[in-house]
Amino acid sequence: MDLLLQVIINGLLLGGLYALMALGLALVWGVLNIVNLAHGALIMLGGYAGYYLFTLMGIDPFLALPLVMLLLFILGYALQRYVLTLIARSPMFNTLLITFGLDVIFMVLAQLFFSADFRTINPSYAGAHVTWFGLTFPQVQLYSFAVALLLTVGLWLLLLHTRIGRAIRATAQNLSAARLYGVNPKKIYALTFGIGAALAGAAGDLYGVVSQITPYIGATLTAKCFAIAIIGGLENPLGVIVGGVLLALIESLTALYVGPTFIDVASFGVLVLVLIIRPQGLLGKTAK
Image 1 (cartoon, rainbow, N blue to C red):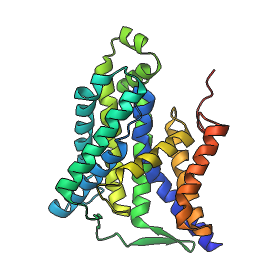
Image 2 (cartoon, rainbow, N blue to C red):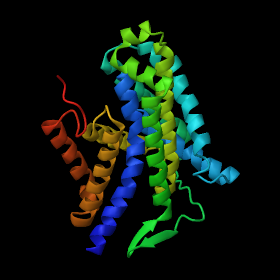
Image 3 (cartoon, rainbow, N blue to C red):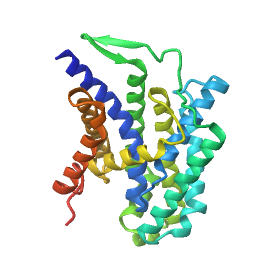
């Protein structure tokens, strides 16, 4: 019983990071209608940024988060403003092709500059843990979960209670009406993609603390984020949190009772079930 509770705790903590990883993809998908296949590569770049800030400059990965997010925001803003804007309003197939191309370019550049070696951000407290009621909470995963939750709530507040957030939501809901109210769609699109990239950067920095970074993790992470966004629903950040936690719990329980080999089978099996039974996601709204 203790082992089961420990696995559930580990799954919940990992679920916070999963939710943060998928949040940027869901934001870009919901507002820009772009399925960003380079999202995992942006997470990978965020991981490398955190790694080199830690190893070369000694900056703690959690203190480095604002700088990593700023770097990825600038990259995401520039990508949307000068590359993806060229295919605005193009068929979905074109956006898939160009974001897939970006994913490949980022992967090759990462291999060229950072090599294919495994990298891990390893602060002095990496092995520390807290014990409550006989259960072990790794400090790094506990901090990562707290940061992921804060950033998710921050995005929610940004979208609901700020002028920029209202402009983003208006652009997503009715582009023509948003223009009538003075919203500049190109700036909002670039800003949205920049925010999505910044969230991916934050997730990459935290991912580097709990796992390993290589140039090849992008495709796997993109698939995982895609599954989380579909399971939870795109319209609601809370849905992404639910999707992330659910996927992490499924992976943890599958590893315990079936075996690590079947983790992906179970995860994507649940994704298929959700697509069949509730295609709008667990917390998504039914189309009228």
